[in-house]
Amino acid sequence: MMSFMHHVGDIILWGFIATSLMTTILLGSQGLGFSRLSLPFLIGTMLTTRLRLAYVLGYAVYAIGGWLFAFVYAKIFVSIGYQTWWIGALLGLGLGLFILISLAHLPYIHPHMACEYDHPRSGRVLEAPGFLGLHYGRQTPIITLLGHALYGSVLGVFLPTF
Image (cartoon, rainbow, N blue to C red; front, side, top):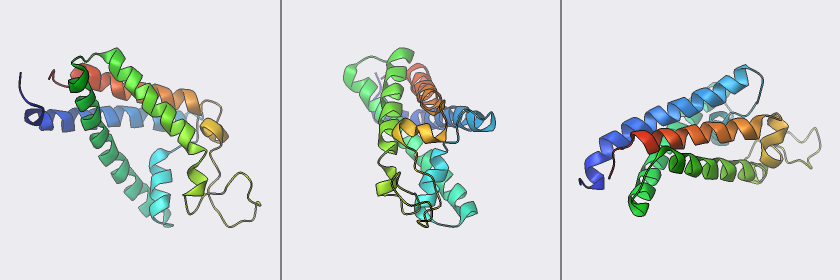
């Protein structure tokens, strides 16, 4: 059994692939009209008001986050001594649920997002996501959980066994 550090390259590779697949699900749902949620855009607009730069920065931070979470998942697999697709999916569902619940609180820290109680002319340019991101579409929670479950499943199957 090799140590965790011998698998850094594999974790980075599969973290990138899992993040790419999850992003494809989330962006595909936007294109098909199921959800208007774009986590990279929300991240990017926290950093800048320039929309093109917000997309670039948001995707960069989002990708780095995907890689970092791949290390967290790998560490969890090591600590429980077992990994499989369904454990990864459960971890992904947990992370997705945490994100969805946290979205309702995002207006309080996001400098450009309106709170649900703001006046329509408050100067904030982004709509509040609401509970579970439902203001961004009724399918948002399902799509978000599906994307995160896929992310975890990919890591559960393809990360090397530790």
